Image (cartoon, rainbow, N blue to C red; front, side):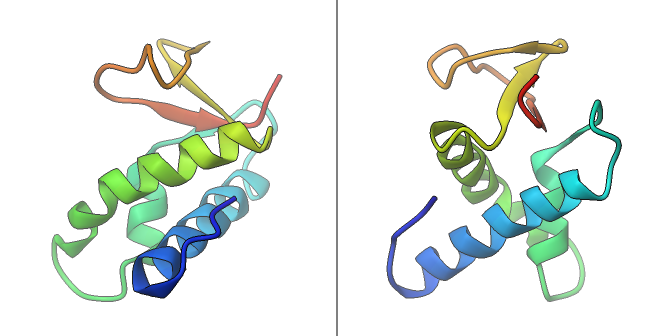
Length: 93
């Protein structure tokens, strides 16, 4: 997980926790979108959660590195190098 300091590190840690918490509340076979975590962490109104999309994707990649989740496209796991476009996040299978 993240060891960054400062506000960006705090946001990254909150996003990591949000991803894991959201997955814990779903069926073991379910996945989430990074936007789910961004929306969960965003504290304001409106579309401000969109600014958290790339940090949410980075948080997911850190969780992949820690063995906590996997990133999928089309229902299949992909590596960070393979990712192009929308992703889903799920528990490893």
